[in-house]
Length: 253
Ligand code: NDP
Picture 1: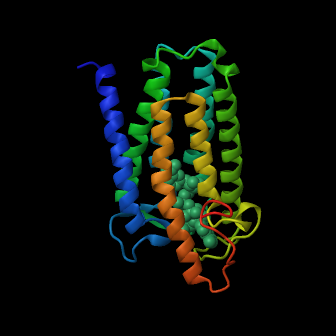
Picture 2: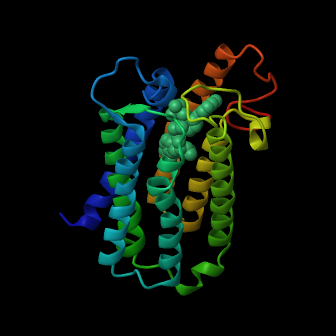
């Protein structure tokens, strides 16, 4: 069977797995960060865990780009640049800015995220640079592209700003937690997740593709349950936690 024929089936299975993942994560938060089990075995330094799992998204996307026949269109080059702008930061800058002291993460989390990034990078890159047949030159003038890129940029800015605020809660590099304030933290507990979600919804709109949509669905499947867990955790841990603050969507939820 050709890749073109198998691709929709991989995509369908991938979307089904996102739904399963969503339900599981509602009941059991992924065990990294504040949910890592005390005395967990088979762990690696968090910093290097982030590098390994996120570098996979860079490598697989580069591989699909250089092997794709439709990489020379203007849209393909912009999509490649957007992906790299996010993942080069996430893989090679973000981990070295974190101030979590000697924190560790389970190997199982690194393995799952690595697998996720390989499949997700393959689906998106292979579609954009090969299986789509190429985006026309006037794609850059379409409303989808304009709106999608605008959402991507806004989400990117929200995510980076929130990550910066969280980082500065640990000026001395310890592993403790505090109530974050400022920016969108005024309204929600997890603006970093909100930004990430807006960013990948923007990607889905700009690429107007099922692989792009599946990435947005996966991001929601991961981060909606996790923002709920974080929100409940903050409320239990800090009796003075701002009552008007929501989990993920300002004023709503
Ligand atoms: P968290 O918000 O759980 O943590 C981010 C960093 O801030 C960690 O170093 C954490 O430390 C620290 N931190 C968080 N809250 C506090 C606090 N109240 N006081 C002090 N320090 C704090 O985010 P994640 O680690 O889950 O995610 C990191 C990035 O990866 C985010 O930008 C997220 O959007 C993205 N991501 C994207 C996914 C996707 O599906 N696209 C999936 C998962 C993450 P510690 O680790 O010690 O808790």
